[in-house]
Length: 417
Image (cartoon, rainbow, N blue to C red; front, side, top):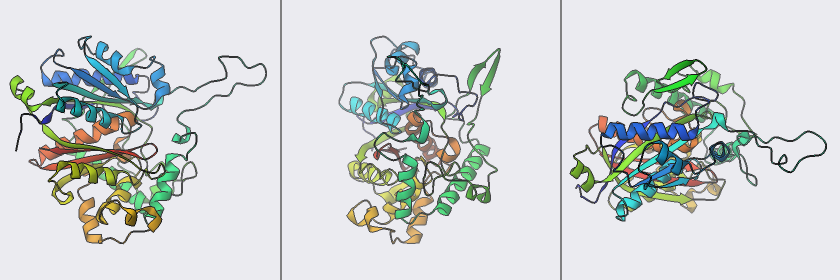
């Protein structure tokens, strides 16, 4: 039943997601985020004065540093929001823009705000090399440059591709199964594109390139003609046992923005409610368990709803940071959920294959990040709006989205349309 205190989504848009070194490579994360904010508010048709707070999720901090950081505050001003609008810039790895939504939800629920914009943006192509020794000088020898994107790992931990691949094997999810899921992602995305399913969420982007202006209208990452044979021949990366460039997304560019309101405010303004946020949840596990963390995040968001079960979900989005993520997480869920009995220390899980297949049929029905791309700070917003619009196309229901973040953080959101 609808309640005036519900937190609702009234606008949700994203840019096309660009490939590494593609047409969007020179646009800053800040500018991409600003364009998404403007478009989301333009679609709402209520001006900018009504926004109380803005949360800006991002992840690749060396690129943000080119804009002297505090992207949230800069975005408020550049997007034309009142200077009194409160803002916060968030780095929670790939969870960042879903965390932005979480904070907006909490602020509205607590009565601190009526209208919040949750933004996520990333341009991985623009991440600069780092030269930490240069400031104080180096007397002899070449200066060393550090690539912050190389291996996508952390100083004291494995590259995420290594952790994801090893945990996948512990759960009995082999390389071939991951390649097949990657192919599924490409095929499902191509079918969804042919049916015009992304027209509601994606807006075209004009990009200046020298003396020319290029209009980017679609995601650049997809490889619709790839075959399983081609995927099987790709080498693994960074020492991972299973992860390849084919069953992983690229290092992408893009932004998304979601406008949240209280239902009371939406009704007062007379704006259309696209869907309601029923619950939010965050979890964290041992740092190597990144491929498993969407499962307990989904369990927690359902538990917090109080009355929605896994079986009641019409659709599920699990971000394909790698193909391993939806495969491992769905296997855990089909085995009864996250527990000591389903931890990787127990090895491959024995699950009802029919139940597992039914669950996977609900996941990423229009393809996922392997095809669409994964501009890390923006992906939480992207899977949320993809879920929202597909629920609307199907006439409503419950859906949940979950995303993993570096060192096994996880966020989830439960929507009702």
